Structures are given as structure tokens and as C-alpha cells.
Image (tube, rainbow, N blue to C red):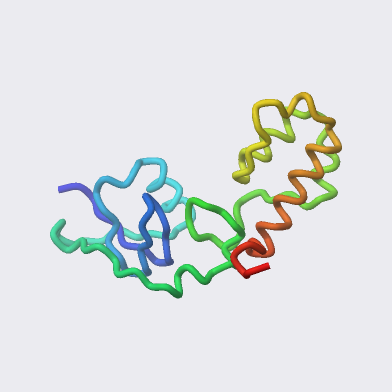
Length: 140
């Protein structure tokens, strides 16, 4: 029998929300499980496989703008967020693009045609919007 895990925090993955105490499905990707384990968001659960149930949808789960805008899992702060000064100190477009990708922001295929300062400003703006919980969810 494969090792099963239950959540300690609210986890969103594979388009589903798992509340604390939920048993994760066996088909969870290895990378998702490794991330959850590294953050200590899950713990081993000695439960028969039949114990897994679809979690009920809770509209309050959608009302959590404090999740830092990170789309994969509900975490309060994604690892390694840089402040605007740190972003301005990045000296290559490739590094800015790599950081943007890490935080879930796509600069697009033609980012190399733009100026370094423009790319930095776009990343800073994106990050600030995400930290505010996304103004579009609050009815601008």
C-alpha cells in the first residue's frame, strides 16, 4: 500500500482545495508532494485508501487574498520574494526573466527587446499587485 498524507494547512493543487486534515489523493504528482513535505504542510496518514473523499467547496476559501498571489499552493509568502531594491539591482534581462518566472509572471517571448529598467518595473508592479491580494478580486 502506498504511503498516504493528510494536510496540516489548506492546500490547493490539481484544481482542488484540500482543507486541514484532508487525505491527499494517491495520484498527486511527486513534485507537489515533495514541495508539501519540504514546507511541512503534510504528515503521513495511516488510513485505508477508501478514506479519500472529494472536499466540499467552501466559498470562504476563495476569500484569502493574503496568499501572496501564488497560484500553486496556499502559502502566506512564496520563498525568495525580492523587494523592489533587490529587483533593481539585477543586472541582466535573463536574470529578471528567471526571477519573474519563479514568482509566476511571464514577461513574454520578446522580453529581450525591452529595456532592463522596463522589465524590472514590470516585475515590481506585478509583485506589488500580488502582495495586495490582486485588486481585481476586490472590485476596483
